[in-house]
Every structure is written in C-alpha cells, then in structure tokens.
Amino acid sequence: MTVVTISIIGIAAVLMAVQLKGLKGEYGIYLAAAAGLVIFFYSAGKLQVIVEVARRIEEYIKINNVYLTTLLKMIGITYIAEFSAGICKDAGYGALGTQIEIFGKLSILAVSMPILLALLETLKVFLS
Image 1: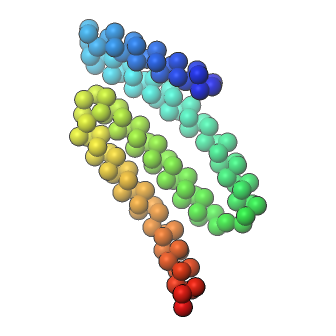
Image 2: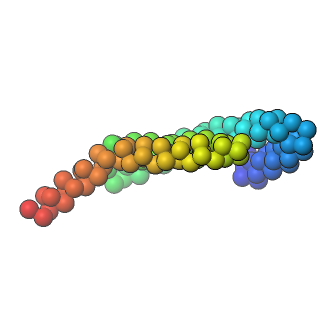
C-alpha cells in the first residue's frame, strides 16, 4: 500500500463515520477506530525497513546498540500514545486523550534517562 491508499482508507472511513454519526454516533467511532487500527498495523510493518536501515547505519558508525534500541522504543511509545490519544479525543474524551499524551511523554523521558546519564558521563570525562 502507498500513502495514497492509506489516505483513501482514512478519508473513506471518516466520510462513512460522518454519515453514521447521525444514526448511531458510536458506530462512527467504531468505524474510525477500525480504520485507524488498519493504518496502525500497516505502519508498524514499515518499521522493519527502518530497523534494517538503522542497523546498517549502526555498522558504519559503530554506535552502541543501546542507543538504537532506546530510539526505537521512543518511536513506538510516541506512535502508540498519539494514536490512542487521538481515538479518545475523537470519541469526545479529550481529557483522557491528554492524559495518555502526558503518560507517553513521561515514558519517553524515563526511557531516555540512560542516554542522558551516558552523555553526562562523557561530558564529565572531557571536563575533568
């Protein structure tokens, strides 16, 4: 599938959801969530290409594997949190969506702490 195909799926789902909103509002939300899941899982499949390229870059510049793993975790957390928050906001539960976004940001901060500590250790060596 291409970006055009995914865009058409999204637009078609939204148009059908708008039509269903007048009859039964919850069906429109279910339809939008289902289309979102299709796009989500297709996007997750694209991560394999990104991981392969990142591994090749890692071989060229000899970076620590922990950095790549952490970066991929951060990308995953961001994608899942934004997807979930968007569904909550579309369903009319904006406060819950905002809480998911905040939790996602805190999770990214927690995952990135080892890299921050390694950076500070490196700076400490150079400054001493």
